[in-house]
Image (cartoon, rainbow, N blue to C red; front, side, top):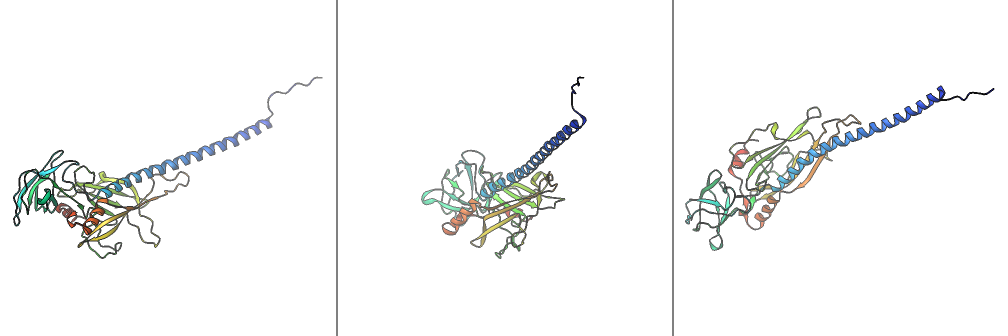
Length: 332
């Protein structure tokens, strides 16, 4: 009697194979899920870092450029439009020409160096008119021919507007409506294109449920009013309060190193600290994990240079604050 050969798998073998397959599939799916969560976490934090990096790079560039004085576009030669007579006691009219680019622009109280050689002198503009203001009045000690060079040397000593008195700053000085821990005020030829601007950064730190924003408000230096802050000026979102320092003191968005110059003060270093939470929760923990970015030593190079020059060599290199900037500082 011959036995028939049995083909296929028994029920027990089939169940064992399915069990092994399910275990392998579970391991693979778990690995894929973990990989997707990791990718989501990386993408989430990359997006957050990209936003913070863009904002801090702009802050670095504009703080570093603050205080630069320009009469006209780069490489433009500025000269007197017509001859000027000496006026030791009387302000006389004068106007400026630029060889290339837009018309030159000056402002009242600006110090201009006129002419070369023995007739060179520094004048202070009394009035400025025009759009842009390229005509004005000043007192001249020497007569000057048409076409002699005119330059604005130095920089704005208050290119970073010094901060107000507050518990954060222990220097014992007062600067009405100056920069604060949440509002950074700066001005000058910020873009190095001959156009002088006044810029404010407003840092509003919110909560986890309602995070704040970093706003950038820009206006021409010759403007007579300051635009109200609105959502079109948002530079960075999801701002939170910064962690306290080692002594458990609050850390502001902006902190300033201040130096004395004459009867006033200049800012020679700015520290920026921003804390941002991601827009989406962490895929693995479900938590909104914030990130703090600190730029501790941003030096406004133009302000630092003029502070060093003005206190040691030539005080006329420290250009005074334009009246329009002073007027706009009346609005905190």
